[in-house]
Image (cartoon, rainbow, N blue to C red; front, side, top):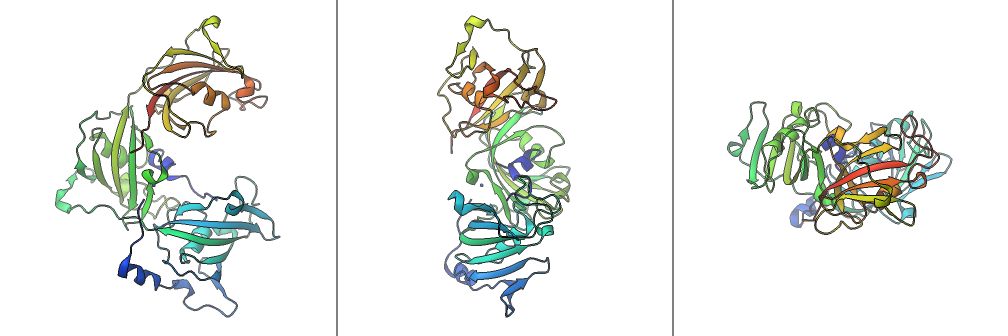
Length: 411
C-alpha cells in the first residue's frame, strides 16, 4: 500500500520510521456538519467520479468528523483486482492501517478517497492505474501493470494532531540563508559536528499546518547523519547549533527543504520542524578486521561464533527496543562488502523483529552499550545458497564487527 519513501528516510536522505487528539465542543459540531465537496450532488447511480478519475461509492455514511489533510486515520480495507482477485486486506492481518492523509504515504487514489469520508463511514474506491500502481504495478507483483483496482474501506478513527507551537516572529533567530529557529529549551549536553550522527525526536509540518510525521507517535526516534547535502539541508544546519537536551523549532525555507519534490508533500513548502536532540553519536575510527584465535570464540547451538572485543556497560537492549550500531562486514577472504562506518551513518535497528539476517540478530543479543563484538555467521544464518549478486557469493560465511552505539530509553 505504501506509495512514497517513508518520511523517516526522507528526514535523512529523510522512514521518518509520529501525535495528538481531535478537537471537541462546538468545533467538532462544525466539522461534523461538513459535507464532501466533490460529492455535493450525488448521481442517481451513487457513483461519484472526481476530476482525477477516482470513482467513489458510499456504502455507509459516517457520523463523525470529516477527514482533513494532516489527519492521522485508522482504516480497515480490502483490495481487489477487476476480476475479483483479492490482493491485500488489513482484515486478514487483523491489524488496521494507520496513515497521515495528504502526506503522500499512500497511492493517490486511496489518499483521495479516504479524504472524502467521515469517521464511521464505509466506501468503495475504484482507482484507475494512474492513481494506483501505474505502469509498474506493485513491487510485490500482486497488482499487475496498468491495473484498475478497487478498495472497500471502513474509516475507524480520526486523530487530529495539534499544530506547531506558536512563536512570535520577533522571537526567531534568523540565519543568513533564511533558516529561522527558536529554542523552547536550550540543552546542556554535547553539540554535534559534521561527520557525527544525532538521535532526535521530531514533528514535521508543512506551511499549511499539515502534520506530515511525528517520531514520538511512531514509537521510535530518528537517526540523522550530520552530513552536507542531505534533504532537508536546513534540518542538519538547524540541529548543528543545538546541544543534547535542547528542544527547538525550525522554520525551513523551500530551498533548504524538499524543494519541488511533490511526491512527498506539496511542492515548494516551507517546513516547520520541532526537534528534541536526544543524543550525539561520535564518528567512529576506520574499521580493520581483528584477528581472533579460534579458541577464543564462543560457539552457539546454531553454529554462530562470537568474540567480545570490548564489553559494554549497563543493561542489554530488549526485543523491540530501538538501537543503533556501527558495523563492518567481510567475507572470509578479507573482502569488505559493507560498512556503516564508510557511509558515515550508524544503522538504526529495532532488535528481535526480523530486520536483519538471523545470524546478526543472534550475534547482537546480549551486547551492552558501548560493546564491540566480532560475529562469524555461517551461510545458513546469512544469505544461504542465494547470496547477493555481485556482493556476497552463495554459501558464504560472513564476519561482522559490530559496536552498539545507542540504546533508546522511551520518553
